[in-house]
Image 1: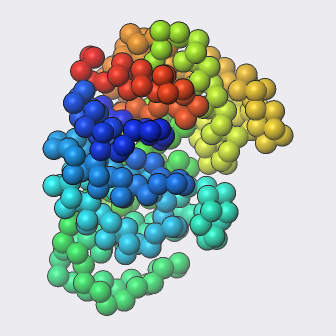
Image 2 (image 1 turned 90 degrees about the vertical axis):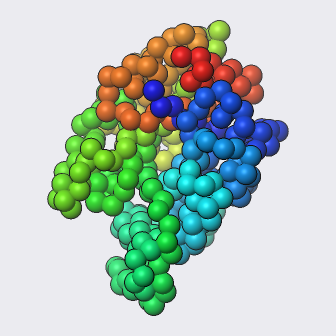
Length: 327
């Protein structure tokens, strides 16, 4: 099965070294997040130069901190640097990140995503036409399109954002949507795709799969609980995604987290939530669960995500034990 990897924190490991290691143990793709501290495009350039086959992508860059033109230029450069191995993964991020870090207004995020992706499509069309665009939020005029074929995946969580995926994107990166609700959530993507005359079967489903593998299964599961509590408490979109199945639990966790009761919030994450939102346990359990996700669901391209609360030892063990060479 195809299996990709995300590592949010590289620690002391250099990007190129991580990429070479991931390629050597069989991962098909390596994706980078981007929040604060490091520029994903620069890191991916280092990774592209150090590897030969592994796919590379952003999961995700937000649609506020870079203009559509800059996203198109970034995609063009990374597509060239990687010899065609790059995927542009976008998302709207959160109000906290957009307003308090980037100083932009978190205005109409779904519309912003739609217009940004639509413009990136036009800027990379390579059809000889000069790009002119007048949207509700964005407007450009009279620049030629670049000639670059870069797949665009979008991390749409809510129904309106999932429709953006169906209308415009090559792939969907769901995050914090319970695995048991993925197929139901994808129906919104399917409907939007068909309305545009697109084939939904050509849209890749590539979810974040938070994964923790340890010989101490309880350590792995506790790490996953803290991971879930952090996301539920930190962003409305994430809370709403979890609430697709766990509405009451998500509300209680979010309230506790916002009040500063972080340990209490973590303790509210049930075993059922751990198993429906991630993969945690001893190495063999983790590998069996990843096999099930790939074989028995709509998932095309699972992306193993090391939970951010993980220790360095748990992080390294998870990367090693979940690697395709172990299957």
